[in-house]
Image 1 (cartoon, helix red, strand yellow):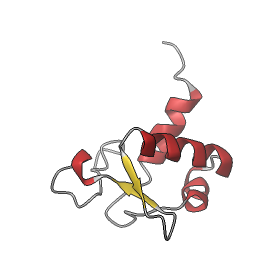
Image 2 (cartoon, rainbow, N blue to C red):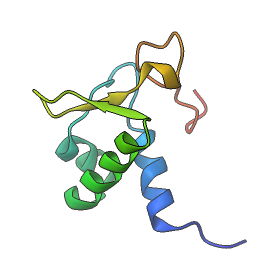
Image 3 (cartoon, one colour):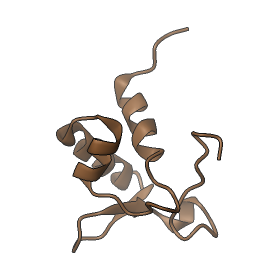
Image 4 (cartoon, helix red, strand yellow):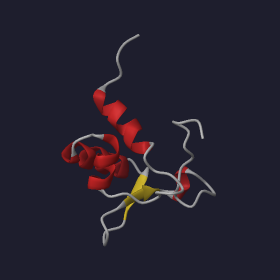
Length: 84
């Protein structure tokens, strides 16, 4: 089996950081949670926002899932990556 691209692996790690307990995350907070550099984290989160998966509060600069991605979840995705 081929190794997944590091960009894809980083995106999946970052996507899994969001939960009902932590629905809003800033770049530094997400970077700390994953061990991914802040610059890479910022680029990946910005890409997920550009793709319409995340929204960003321009006042706090924090990211959250778009509600349309996870209907009925109030912008918090299911923790499908960890089996919750």
